[in-house]
Length: 60
Image 1 (cartoon, helix red, strand yellow):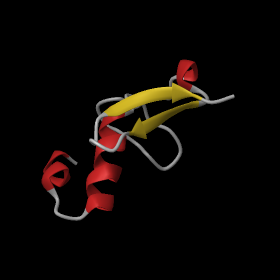
Image 2: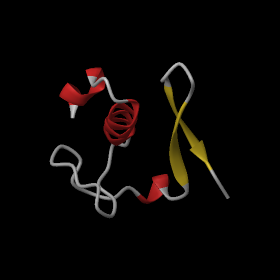
Image 3: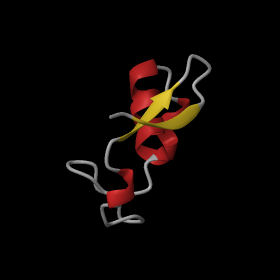
């Protein structure tokens, strides 16, 4: 995924960025370095701002 962070296509870059920000496995997004789902992250979404910085935001 790190290789996609410099991808010229914005969607590929953003998908890679959000996948790397989430430090768990959930649904189809499985990570070998974070193999478990974290219940504390239920309802938490990765938001990418216009400058491509990432933040976590909890939605009700």
